[in-house]
Length: 224
Image 1 (tube, helix red, strand yellow):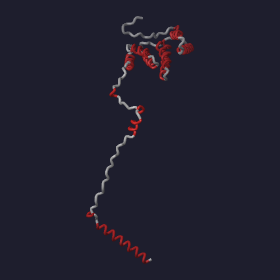
Image 2: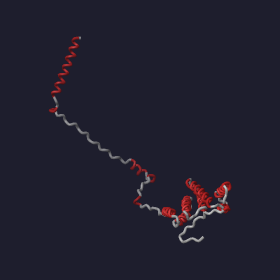
Image 3: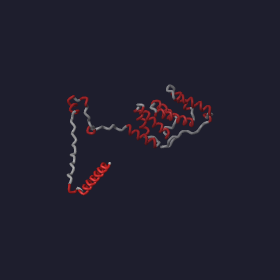
């Protein structure tokens, strides 16, 4: 098939009669492939089994491998996730949006597993990917991965003395440093009472009342 400049190759969606499977055969085929994709010692057998799938089966198997890779990645099992992402990519169109998404996950898995060079190399390739979303995300990831480390200037750092390296005399001086006493506010003295303002009429009434009470009590005592 001849492609025009700028044209993206599309996966073949035709299904021939000789690859159509009934439900029982398809389940058996998928079980066989699932067991093959998890083994590391039979890459040729796995590739041969995957090549015998039709397009619908490849898409279903790619989705399953992608989901398994994401599950393992989120639980920190990055090396196993890489295997599933690679299998999903082999079943997908690498220049399509789904293939670009798988490769972005593969970049993250490479970096997380310590394979930085492979992750950077793949990320640099993805900035030329035909899918716009894949291209933009790969540029963001590459910018973060290649960002230079921030150098701290000496004036930005506050140095704290190490008390373990100080001699005993210095530690005693720091420990016995006197605290400044707090200044107490002077108590305000009460203002002198102005006798001219005292109501003497009320005082006379009080004395008269007391005298009346005393006379009443005395009379009662005398009568008893």
